[in-house]
Length: 563
Image (cartoon, rainbow, N blue to C red; front, side, top):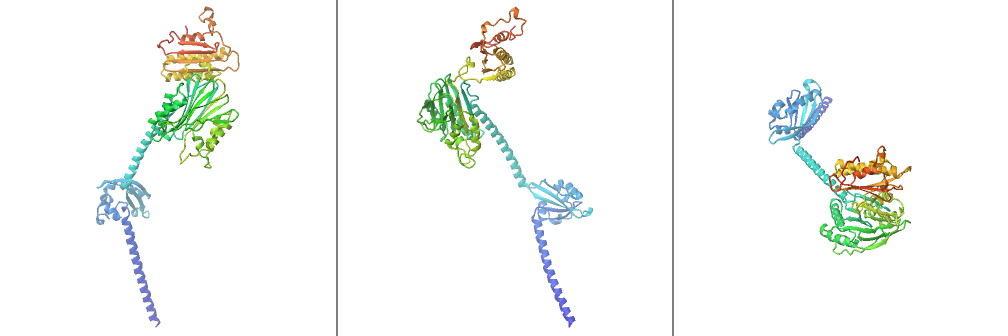
């Protein structure tokens, strides 16, 4: 009985094991088929041994070489896929050195031609005959084409960017040419300028023009828009202003004529805000006109202020801008501040804007001090955008009045009155020599010959040395000033000292026998021989010479050494 039960139990167990074996076998076969299906549907793959005999391939590889399995497995990779010859030696090296290789691109010169990416992975247990490797291929034709297209387009974009950058740099240089290189140098007046375009080029502009010896024009404008379009329109605004700003034209007349010009030339919907004032240097009366521009402010010496609020519409919009002229009489100690709205429309870190009143209040607090410090604090406190993520240009022009009768320095008596050249101070022969060298470089840049430049250098150096040595005598703190103006046809150079002066007509002739052995006294004689004209003014404290290029009418002739 017990034996029968044991036999039954063993039969049941055997059946169970058989069922389990069937189930496990089916699952293994299903898993194998699944793995084979996956293997067949991935990128082309081939398994080869150290002799490059193919042991296994997937369907993708068979389709790549266009051969059935029977013509692939067991054969040499070199026979089946000669187009992969560049990988054969690499595959052997990978199996020998036991290290993977790739990815690397190869050309499959078939129909159609493809670009493949190959990777090699060594297999096996390290024994020489058991070494195997997997060559995995991936079709990257489209990717390579896309990569090449991207590289080509990046190169084209780089060339375009370089061209745009070059044009932008040229536009910046052109715009710099629209701004005054230097402001007039008038005794009793000083200027402060701060110009900060939001982009490499901007739409703000300013100018200070000497209308004649006693009238000075102040101009600030803001063109709508930003960047290159605004910069080009700013050029038209400046040309129109220079065409019409004359001593005989009132501020209203200048704006009426500019408005007529700009209505024809500005793009539709674009406009200009502007301020123009004419200062009479003899009476300190400022006559001014405003075309929807932020109100300039006059800051008095005691810190009080007054806004200049004449009425008038934008330039370039309507036919009749209804411009109205107002005037104010200024006093020594006053500061005229003209600016664009970029300074007070920008937001601070909290998002709050400074506003017009806040801006002019800070300007008033800086009365009697350099306004640049106040402007830099404003720029730091309110660095944000104006609106909709847009920044704006910032322009500030200030004129300080120091004396009741400002005007051209006496040093410039013999200079034309169209524009005042800069006046330079020097207190040593070294400083004087540096200034003369600067003048020499400007002459060469202007096309003067090196011989004429040396003549000018010698004459200017003589006058500077005379001012320091003879003009100031034994003073321990000699200080002199010089200035020059240069064109292609003439050079004017002037020197002024603070000494008592001298009678130029009483100078002894250095050619007299009794003076031939002296080592001084030839400076004035030498300059007379070099220069076309030489003048002494203000009791001999100011010397000015005129020099023309060699061979021109009226130029000095004769040796430059004075012999």
